[in-house]
Image (cartoon, rainbow, N blue to C red; front, side, top):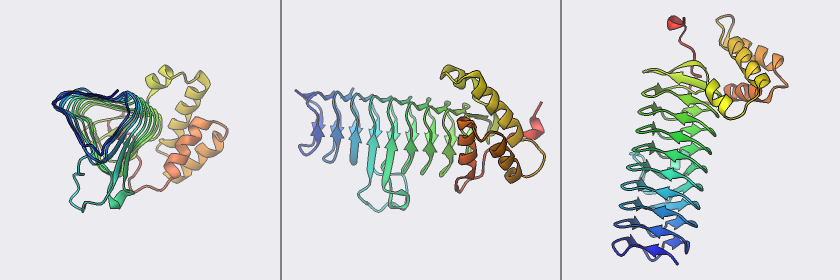
Length: 266
């Protein structure tokens, strides 16, 4: 039986699994769907056309699914989909999509959104992603699986963050970040590979060695990026993790690829 605190306001049209818990002073709108064992701890607002997957916990003062912070939004019936087993901490905000971005914002499974993290309209966030305190995604950002975004970082609209990346705290990310990369800085630059993350997630020595060699070739200062990319593709055509980087760089994007800061290199 659904456990709804007597101070909570739940629209009768909302769809709640029988195992949902809605704590004190929460609000749940008419187009909301809450899956099995979802918990709204207290003072949570879930509105709009929002679906929350099983086992997700949302903590006090989070604002989920309300109107996007986009002046072009005209009330279109866009959606927010949140996957399973996510932890959405205090003061987190997540907005639905817009007509200009596919009408959907989507968050995967097993993510952690720490205090005051923000996921803007039309973002696509993968699985096992961590946004630390006050990390913010502007509209249309794509974040790959297992990415970690440090506290107070800000990601520019339309940027792509590859899988297994590490974004340093207080970084301003204006350009696409290759899979397995690590970036940092006021205007973020590529500082190498996320070697600690790769080791923690069980990548073998051969893959890490190939990634390091490919990185050196791709971001050397000889030739053009297009020439170096072809060299990497030819040298490492049988290494899946390296070819993931090649495919990422080759893909169409409105943003440039984040580069090393050679002026400050040791």
